[in-house]
View 1 (cartoon, rainbow, N blue to C red):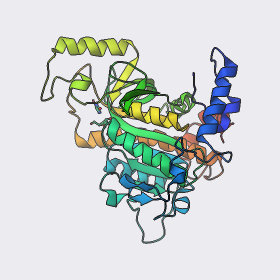
View 2 (spheres, helix red, strand yellow):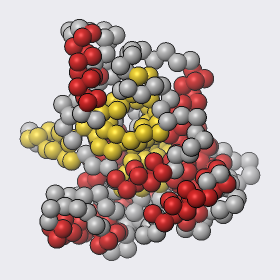
View 3 (cartoon, rainbow, N blue to C red):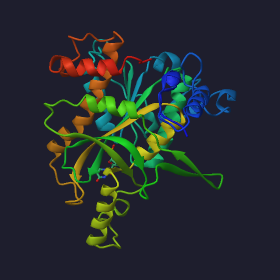
Length: 364
Ligand SMILES: O=P(O)(O)O[C@H]1O[C@H](CO)[C@@H](O)[C@H]1O
Ligand SMILES: O=c1cc[nH]c(=O)[nH]1
């Protein structure tokens, strides 16, 4: 049995495992495998440190060609989402939110532009990276970003996926924080064939981080924020039980039976990356969360019908929640003034802020 406690805090975990000692020793074991004593990221791959150089091909970066420690050593948050545009907008948004200033006359640069695969922006301690669509795309990116964390000697990074999804029994525009990720068969692990054998990696997200994010939703938010199980599929059409793909070998009644069955089992949304995101970050001992906005209620239809301006506004909602978290974290660390750029969470809800603050006392 393993758990999601951040490694730097494994010794204060009070997990309710059947055998507390075993749980603690497994935490310690995972912590040793994924962190150096100073909290920097350690890889579960002995080959990398023996290599003369490591080329992060899909990021257009390399351990010899770039000074990765000076470029990325101060990163704390890695935010990922499907499209380059969303992640560029998120970079500008978080820059405004945390009051990060660029040198006069300069603009944010897409650090990975010459990979022609992913886009990456850095705003102080925040990286904003596009991951493309689906498990293979986000998986390749995660391998390289986790290696980037290692080469850059980043301490205890926190990863977020900021995405879109189909809701189940939730209207469009609802924000969903994933508690558990499952595949299309409701299995809570990522299956990957390695050397002809199926490897299963538990898809675990950080429960405490999910609770903290949930606590940062505001009563004044003009939309609901919920938590629940997220189903992650390998396909948008048949894989998500849509009737409107190029192929469909099932009836509407089959579709509804399936969606109702998974809904009953706790699934509140469906998307295409959470399983790999959860499994690979957990394997790397990295605390992570998935926050998606629903684009429609799949119990009512399959097509994305909302107008572009509405979709744009909806996509801002998970960004806003993650921004609240980042600002709260930075203000706890004294990097952001509570009355300056702290925004609505301080001004409108001092009580909630205090509660969240108490919860965060053992932040590293
Ligand atoms: O909006 P993003 O982050 O791309 O996420 C969702 O949207 C895509 C499908 O349209 C899939 O990648 C799915 O996971
Ligand atoms: O229904 C949806 C909407 C967005 N992304 C998905 O994967 N599915």
